[in-house]
Image (cartoon, rainbow, N blue to C red; front, top):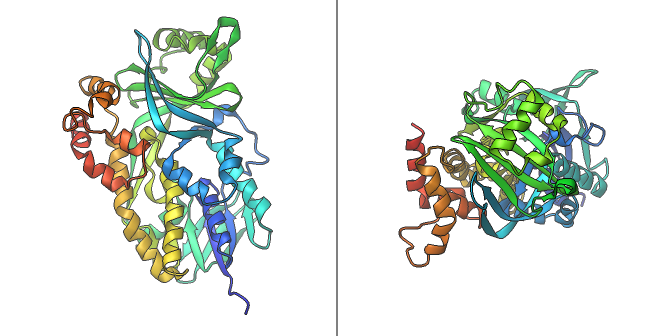
Length: 428
């Protein structure tokens, strides 16, 4: 007896949308269409200066490992990182080792691998991916989505619709406008600029370790994070309060070089004048956070990833939690034998508390006050060594529990609520 094939439309060909296609196609009873507003990454110009680093940790890696061969393909483009190196103006950098390594990879490479593995594994009869195509409307009752490319506006029917179209999700906006869900949007307290640099300058005898994440505290509230990438590169961001852009009054590339010579001197020999000028001219970026009251609308529509829970990147869980959404949705479909009418409400029930907890953890794990930051460093370094003798005094911080395991975010928040409340209070 021939299976009845359901048509699934996924809006968004980012990591979460592409991984979901992998999961669903393995089930054998779905045809997938994916629509993405951005250009095809296989033909678009790839630039190290226009992407950003992602550290895949336990939650994200567990989701990736469900698909045979996917982790191996990603490691060809990523670097295993075994901890964090914290630099200061004086003295040697402090090293925080991680029991569980993370896979540092830039978003362009992550997306490209997920796409190519998908298209190499399935035929066009199974999956179609269309780029430069915007979603401009959703009709829940008719189960149609309206799309627009450079040539035309057209309508597609679906049995199930997944909104994986990022923090400015048009699927979410349309459903909210029709009264099917409620959500809040806010800008995170930080702004940022991204940069990429080589990690080696043999002429000046500089070589930063290639298997660890590098961080600097430039000034109060201003920090720099650089993650290792393939081909001996570092990719990262300089993060600062929107009203305190440290590069704002630097009018030349030479001034930017002088800034790094003072604030992060080990990076100065790695930065060319062109690198400095590129960074100076880059626009300041802001991250939009999203908090929804549900992840599904009935039994036919669901939201995953940034479309439903975009968070601050401060603890590196945006992509990890999005990939985990996919794994949990698949587990619920297993439980209910692909009965979406029953599965999607349960998906919301299982996931909502965790993604709301992640919002607090992302906003209030990393202290910004002069008073709390030294305590944070102490507890992340010496405090960990003293914990076996004084467990009630040196309890784990949220970062430790998140990085070293896969406990639900709601449990991590419950165990570290005192610290989160103190950080929130210190920010006023």
